[in-house]
Length: 412
Image 1 (cartoon, rainbow, N blue to C red):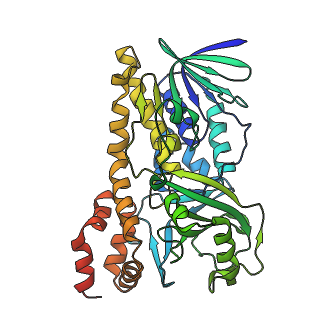
Image 2 (image 1 turned 120 degrees about the vertical axis):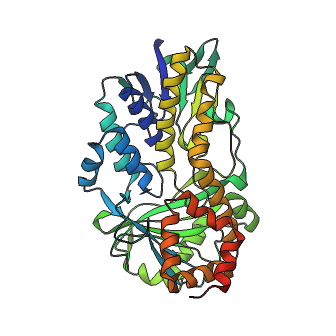
Image 3 (image 1 turned 60 degrees about the vertical axis):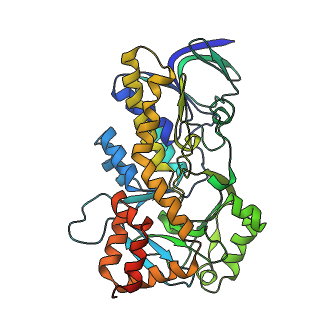
């Protein structure tokens, strides 16, 4: 059997793994990246990219973002329509709507296209060796790293970066990351064509229907009149209520008094597909001797918004930074890599904590209805809530009981 030796091996060529490889290459560090699929390949996802993604691409290479914005597989999306349980809609522009809002917003692109686009940028880099259709079947700890067994080759590496996604075998069996229903969400996705009433500015839609709380139903616009339609509910809620999410999704699309009218004449263009979302509502150990966990394998999905792509990209960038520092120490032992955990939770931990608290508040229909009604009548509050999506300090207001007291007793 053929044996390959590489100092750094990345398992998984999604956004987290690709960013790690590219940022390493930018620092002059070679790597091997393997993936079980042949690109382009589909990945079940909500397909929404926050401003974090644009920020990371800018830091990597100023040429990528302008090129990405020219691609016809993506559209810009700078806001969200929250639909409260009483069906009142709150329309929020990310970062606020004032004249000073110059921040690059978000985008929406199918993962099939996004991942292939990033993969092509990576494939041009001479410091990155890429192996497609190479599934990692077994991980064996060695004295100075890992043996990664694949069907045709054995890879010997000093440092393993696991970016293999929500179902990562390495994370379960070697990093000790166990699935916990309260920190895990079940999701379904289906693509539709010709859904009526889409937002003219391509804002995403989150429908907090009372039968799904604290989960929600979503509609995300896509190019060519298509839409990503889905449903996400925390796994412990699904089990306790004995929910069949496929049935719930069908019922909403066909029977909901408002939503069903928008699907009259709309056509599904693929089958309903399910996936799991390991949530960042619990801090976990993300590094150890000769390994780092990235993206979904590290459970870095936002508990409230469901964002995973931007967080995965951040983890790839932070992984490259810690590797650069560890190399100067001459080893990849746990103590040399521990700074990765600190860096990830310093960047994302507050967001996760706030989202977890807000998700708990969403259980109260009356409170959600009240906030939406109040925001629709108060421009300052509406502006503040729009900025909360990009400012952790402002989002922290959502955890403060005084925020809700001011809402209750303040003037519209």
